[in-house]
Amino acid sequence: MITFEVKKPGEPSFTDRKSSILWEDFDIQQGLTKEVDTCTFSVDKSTSVTYKPGVGDEIQIKQDADKVFAGFIVRTSEKQDRSGKLFYSCDAKDYTYILDQKLVNKTYTGQTEAQIIADIITNFAGPGVTGTNVVGTSTVALIAFNNIAPSAAIQKLADIYGRDWYVDYNKDIHYFTKESLAAPFGLTDTNDKYVFSSLEIQADITQLRNSVIVEGGEAISASTFFDVYVGDSIQHTFKASWRYATPISATINGVAKTIGIEGIADFTTADILYNINSFTFRVNPATPVPSGQQIVFGGKYYYTVVAKVQDPVSIALYGTREFYIQDKNINDKDVAKARAKAEIAAYGTPLLEGSFDTDSPGLRPGQQINITSASRGYSADFIIQGVTVKLRTPLTFTWSVKLITIKSFELIDLLSQILESGRQDPGANQQIFVITLVA
Image 1 (spheres, one colour):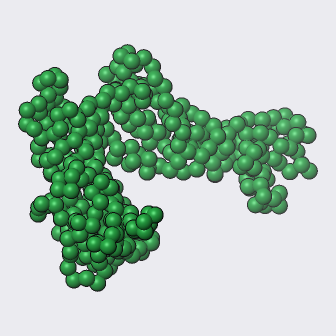
Image 2 (cartoon, rainbow, N blue to C red):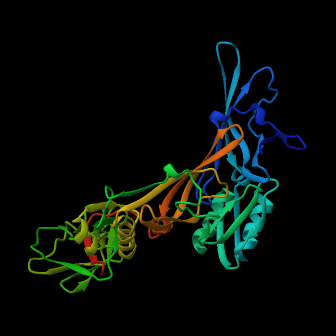
Image 3 (tube, helix red, strand yellow):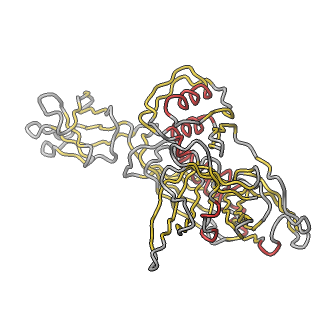
């Protein structure tokens, strides 16, 4: 039996409002773990319908004892047809909405992940949120949250310690080590767990990438470089080969000179003024370097990191498919290499995706599901990426399931972690690091 229970603010209990819902407009979108689930539906406010939806209404949608969705209405839209009948379109979010009631502005020292989350729940989350399924034993030496939502604070912890998390339909936070969650059933040609004609597996090479260049921002060189000039008793401005990083070394005729930044220092406090924007330096025009004296200027320098990664196996099979990524926030060659490697790992072979419809409950995003089909000569494991729930009739749900390969699922997190590391300002010169994957 399907119920659509509603509790308006201030009401003590839920009331089934299923008869008020236009089942044709009903839709639930479930995303991977921490992604917020959403529900959209419409209400026909005829004279026989007493329920008027409002923002803040708490809803629970059930099939028998199982909750298919639970959360709060966050948006309503009122419309009226020519006959005067009112219709309400409603958008609802899961209980992550009530989690993010206040902003976390606190520093934690020497506490475990679980202790920090418990404190966030107590002091910053909305009423009814619990942490029964929080498992996090690592001790956090120091972490500071500066006016961010509780969900963002928990995500920050999850990123550091390789966890995943979500708020379930009972307002309880699950925080756990990432692992494969088995689906309650797999798909075969004969087990009747899906609409047979709906299963579709797609292989796609339009996004194939097996030679990837990643251009990042600036990094400071490990080695030093020195420009050498010879004075002529006239020239007082010189062009440097690089944008040098401080401290910069300079000698004239073997004698060390003091260097100041142009616009900050002047010739009363420095022997040489360096312009960091034009890569030029100058001596005092009143006392140019005498003819024949050598000027040595330099040190460590800024360069733009560029990493190139190639997959010879993929190139041999499909030909070279080059791809260029520019991310000026990446300022480390190892991060650039990792970014390029991850791109090839994700797109160096044809992408496999799938989808199917089922009338059997229990499937959730993040679960691993096996598809074995003798008629197709096919057997593989997939991760459920997303689930759309609709009412096929007023009395029955249908689930539309989107699938991705396990490799693609793992790389979603890998790419996000890489993109969050090693970020600084962009630069101008390039130094290319080329690596080739070994088959």
